[in-house]
Image (cartoon, rainbow, N blue to C red; front, side, top):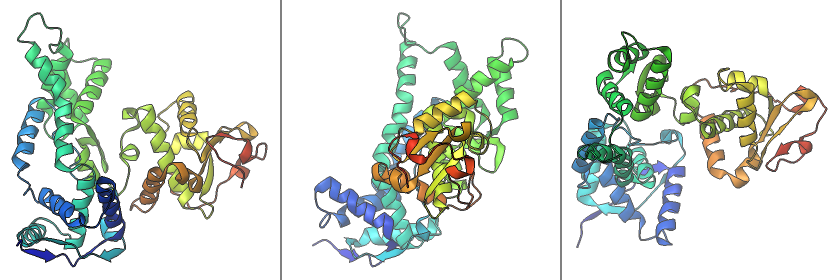
Length: 376
């Protein structure tokens, strides 16, 4: 008979409930499977699942291709230690429980319940198998191109730009400043003694995209991996709200807009806020996008139920009602709530009530063009 022990631990309640829902969605029932699935999560967390070496080898391959192997090993979207705890009573193998506790004691500052919650969170997100698959997806095209160079007739060989980009990625190191990156571009990609401004911008974007890097949350001059930035940034701060505006595509800008305006709505008693285009462009996007782009992003956001645009008093405004947004987009609303509870200052993190009345009475909420907002 297998030797098992009960996990009589206090675990963050929200994460435990999401784990139960995940197990239920996989097997149609949670009872009888919680312990088994928790064991798999615990093994991956302490690298006892037998596949740690496989991921290490994949990381070497990713690095050789000039990319960053870091790729969301622990995407924890909220401060688990701040959640209300609940007592669990599942059983797992006794040796695994002892090994897990020893690992947590030696390598983390968490209590056992929070450490288990982190393991469950990563496991729900796909765990090691998803990480390895994501990493391989990032280098498979490079591998095909490199192999294609062995055949002179192949049209898949690496271009000169790709070669130079990979060389720059190797040259700059694990973290680097703008000065170091520019110097590397000058040395490797310049046609003359120095690279032109367009060349610097072109290769900067290529390198940052290839490495999946972003600016340090506390030092705008330093580039680091996205994983490192997530660890440093206040818990639950969405990546779209941390990253430089010039690195965001339209969809990411839309989410940045919704998350930051939603956070402002969280600070109101009505969970409903209306803000002008001018303030959104300045405070959400650091005044780094044009008015036409701002209007496009606002219209994209207004496709969501609970968000609308209008033009009272000839000012373009955006209205967000968090209660309505949650009806069709519960995950987005959850991200907003977690973002609102994150530490640190935030764009639009103002507790003042702001409504259409602040910008003129020429148009009522029901007349706004939106994905379903109605009058109060």
